[in-house]
Length: 432
Image 1: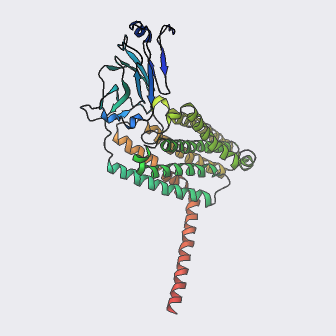
Image 2: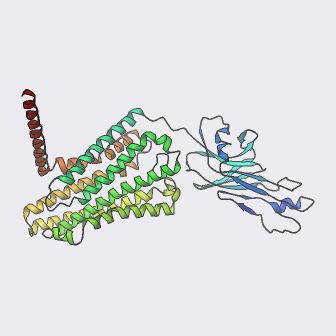
């Protein structure tokens, strides 16, 4: 309020949690005989449920989204309410900003939202400044084009591919856990890679049919995207740990088993594998809490928040590349010097190439995913490669491993012999 007993030297700024207003009360007070003017500024948190954005009538068929809280400004106890300057409102966006959408500063007129006398001064991904030549009840509405209808064939392909990948993830996990492996092989990293990616793909599979319902529950959608962020990132951390174990194995071919027991225990590896990913997610939540919960319940692309996932992934891929270069150099020197048994070196070489293949299989689909915008072919290729990671891991480490194939044969022979014995016993009981 401005009056004879209250003096202001600049235009006042009134703030609420998600909005603010700049109004020239000083100039208005000079236009009143009482030399006074007052302003009331209110913000309604849930008013958008009543004054819906669909009441903004436009000729185009677009999706309308309320981007701000509804606010109201009046001039109580002021005789001359004519504005000397336009009023500026700053709205904080309460929903994800779509750069392809168009923003409109609107005010409520009897039964609809209209734009007369209001315009957008400036905007960014977080805030928009509106300018109006009158006072009323205001809001910020964004119009976006309707998303194309989902392709039922692509949805079916996605479902089938994810289910097939989950089956092979499970088979690979069981193989790593129960098959006998040589002393050179540490399966802790591989088992946890499978666990992380299996849970991530399973969560994705379970949430996709209900995505239209989940995306309206912002907290639930954000939690799901945070879990996916953690699980996929932990898979990459475990891939890095496997590369480190392989590097140690190549450097210490004759001492690898004692080295693992002394330095790289299973508990220590588990702490590194999951805590690193958890720390990245927690820091991301602390810095940009609204960064989770996009339309697909994944990380939001605005504000560069996607780099909370792509950044660590790129660092891990770069570190793995450096490790593999060092491993290849060390293997070549080991072949020349023959300080260890030739069979042991050859077995290590096979492990190197399999881990390198796994590195390509797990890393390349995510790099490809960056370039899938508006390309159906790249989208299908990304879908297949990303969903079949379990299949590739099963083929690389299980099907192409001679000793594992022999254990499979023994298992199936034992299974068939047991079934034959049970059948013969049942047949005898029946005939007697």
